[in-house]
Amino acid sequence: MNQKSGINQTASFLLVIGLVIAILVAGRTFLIPIAIAMLFSFLLLPVSRFMENHGLHRVLAILVSLLLAVVVLTGIGYFMYHQVANFADDGPQLKKELNEKIEDIQKYVYRNYQVSHGEQKKWINEQTDLLLDSSGQYLSGIFAFTGNLVASITLMPIYIFFMTLYRDKIKVFLCKVTPTVQNDHILSVAHKTAEVSYKYIRGLFIDIAILAVLNSVGFLILGIDYAILLGILVAVLNVVPYIGVIIGSIIPFAIALLTGESSAVAFGTIGVCIAVQFVDNNFLTPKIVGSSVSINPLATLLSIILGGMLWGIAGMMLFIPLLGMAKVICDSFPATQPFGYLIGEEAKMKSARRKKDPTKLVQLNG
Image: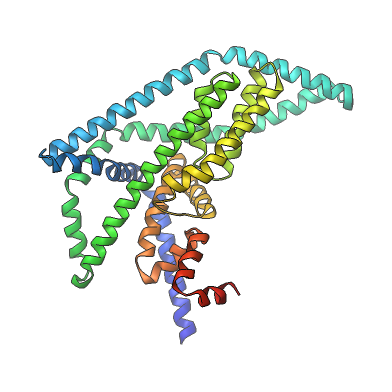
């Protein structure tokens, strides 16, 4: 009977997971703007609440906070547009330099391995075709996400406005759909989730900004072209654990190798990326991001992959903070605490267990 009950519970769990995935895929057009608006609501809530506490009406406080966010995002977008435009203007020159590098490589291969230029050109064309085929889907996904984002950009401020305006109504709703004895606990979980989400998102933005400055300064010292654009790109890619760092190091290395006069400068970009990554792992992330919610790298990587499969580019960015929110909720209820443990940092979990009962830690590790 117990075995049958366990099978039923497993089947029910898998059914729920399947339904959730189906809803995420079918409702992605609606859910992506809602998710973005929710995260920005958490980010702007302290700003509007500060103005409310100083006598400003809630509606005006929310509108002012939204206006400040629009001004900041517009400034960032304008700056990035000019950086990308400068890079695009140099496209023909970069293409010319790339062709020269390829010719040098072909001569080296022919001189040392006796592979003819025709065979090399055939192989390069085959690999280029494969790259274009694979990148076509990726680029179409980027354009689709950009198109959906532009189409929903007018709705997101409205979502943010009403989510912030009706935050008390949402609290009352949570109390009405849960037993009275659990109301205090549910409200505490909701408050903690919002607070942790705010700290996590804020910390992530601060971390990216600091990394962008450090990378850009390092690239400027080396004298490579497009140093600021590359510094920002590497900082954003750093959000993806392991893979993002590798890709982020390859891109400035390739640009420096293509445009620089010495290969030492190209290898210097790798040194900058390694140094900045060391500072980030040991000083920035533990203090800025890690203090809010601790998610282990495997769970983060899996969430990025799953987010990309379900929501495309938007999912790769959104599923990390959503995973942090899920961990807070899982840690707050006994039935879901194992899932919170699974996606949490192992070192901190061991530390917590050691404080509770050292003997149990020995038994668990034994």
